[in-house]
Amino acid sequence: MTVRIDIVSDVVCPWCWLGKKRLEAALEQSGETAEITWRPYELDPAVPEAGTAYKDYMRAKFGDGPDDRFTKMREHLEAAAPDAGINFRFSELTVRPSTLNAHRLIRWAQGQKKGDAVVEALFRAYFDELRDIGDLAVLSEIAGESGLDSIIVADLLATDRDKSEVRAEENYFRGLGVSGVPTFIFEGQYGVSGAQEPETLIGIIEKARKAA
Image (cartoon, rainbow, N blue to C red; front, side, top):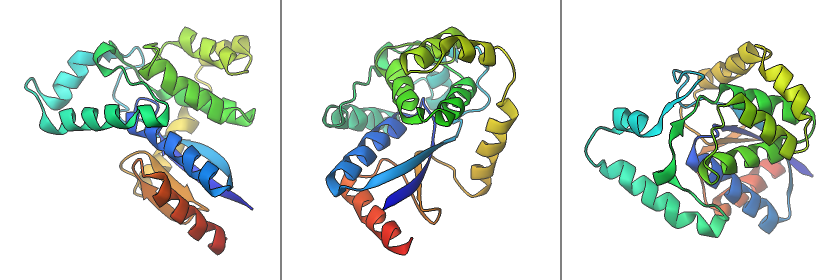
């Protein structure tokens, strides 16, 4: 049977990319198939749509001095990345983008059965290719690279289409108690947060499958 999985995620969250890769590994190892729905979550909805300078943003968030928690987080992510097929280039990031429009793109992509492809492309574009995924032209390019009609996407991005719907969906999951991402919800009843190891996810998938 196919396991239904909702993934509450943000595309500037490095843990979300790692979590995506580990879920893919879990599905491959277990032989299970999944129907995945990506759910929007902005880590910081206050970031302006034009984005802000990455280093200034991180300095304001973590302070001027070295932050042990932040340093350890980066070290852990960079150590785990190669096994997951990920390349993080944190030190080269220049923009902390708003992700509202990226979530609109994901919403439209899912309607065309291309949600996973677009999500992966957005993660890679930001963390590895150092592209500004808050820029509408960049988002249109990513749409085209992922098999969508870039002209139609560009026209939609130029409007306010689905902005309120994305924010409403985001607030719905916040209302359910989601306060960090990634959060995986299996069959609408089993939730787990964080970039869990594939073995942990396999156990939850088996539990959800039996209960479905």
